[in-house]
Length: 262
Image 1 (cartoon, one colour):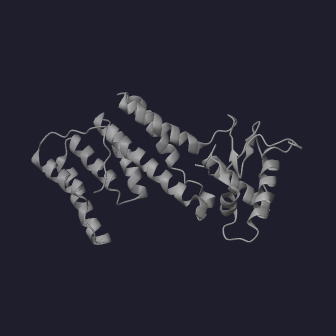
Image 2 (cartoon, rainbow, N blue to C red; image 1 turned 120 degrees about the vertical axis):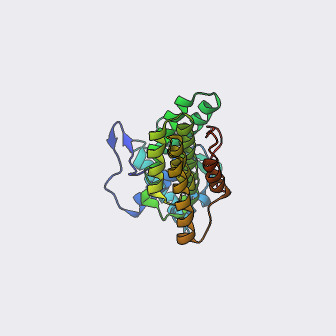
């Protein structure tokens, strides 16, 4: 997910090894453009991305745009940039079919999985979401973890990828792919031991495998851990699942809805 951030031209890395302020700002601006392709931004908006709160923002932006154009198109000369285009009072980045970014890939896969699930092609949906899970294992823009400009995009990406992983858990369970469900849920718990959807998946997988008692114990231990560590209670979904496992009624998992906290 942009980490490590690399730009290739004809298979060769470009712009590496530089630490000058103009190059650092140019890389930040390029990341912003890659997150928002074909979106026009004003000069003030772009200046705030590369140097929030700094003096002479327009001058900084002009220098950064010049550096970025040279960075991407060193043989451009006096010709207009192929990628960075002026649009009235702003600028837009036009990939022109020349770029591929894993951030875009994740978004395409999530959309494709949703369409496949709606069409009843569960195998295709699982394949797409498994690839999303592999991408989600990377930190999004790790070298800009404290850059305010990317905070909203980072949060939205994390939510989208988590929703995709929860959907994958349900698809595994509804397809009786219990080992895959367990492995994926445990991987999520390694990242967040209080992930309710993952805990519920582990419990359901045990119950579907014939050990309802283990499933109930997992949920009760999770309830106690939440109370002791965080001073909160689990959602009503957890309580309903405990009651359902105790009832002995058949366990049915629908692949369509996502597990959510109340």
